[in-house]
Length: 291
Image (cartoon, rainbow, N blue to C red; front, top):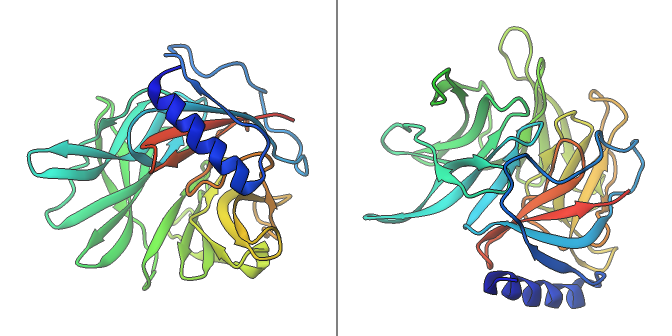
């Protein structure tokens, strides 16, 4: 086990003592060229508790966050720290799943900051938060035949407050989650290219008093987020909520058992793993799930 993994093991072991988790092992992830390890072919039935095995794989040893992957787990996108002659900055980055990340040239306009990059389930679009003069917008980049990413559109979403992006579902009508203020907002694309707000979820509806940015599963039936509950141990936990159909409401939430709190948890398409970042360890980890 490498030195970085040993540090992670010690740090996460300390987290277990704080959060009352079961014993957690941290493993160096081997280089893979044929995709992820064997996993269930599809997600378990709704209502099946999400439970981590206690194994945390240190998959990317870079300071990245909002790590997401396309369906089939071929492409991963995140916002990662890079160092150049101007100092350190955070840029959209791309790589194979569980492999190192490289910056993507999204050719942002001068004065615009791009972050919180999320890849679509199909792997052909990236959704980012673009901020210009303290005004934020959701912008879409699309992959071209030569593999390059080019500007696609700015979504017609009205958000006056600062917000965070929580990813999108599959086509044809994508669902997008945003965190703004003390609520999650859900938007849905229509055939005319509009993105009307369809639902709003207060923290109280999700059984928490505070929450960080949610991510939505590719089928739109599950969301994951870090939430603080004064009822359950008075601490932040990685939590999830489910709904029976994509047009239904998310109600309540449950903690993912045997997993540390993560600021940006992402459930992979087959529900076999949750990916999340650690700023203190400057790495991306994957928690294996068991059903």
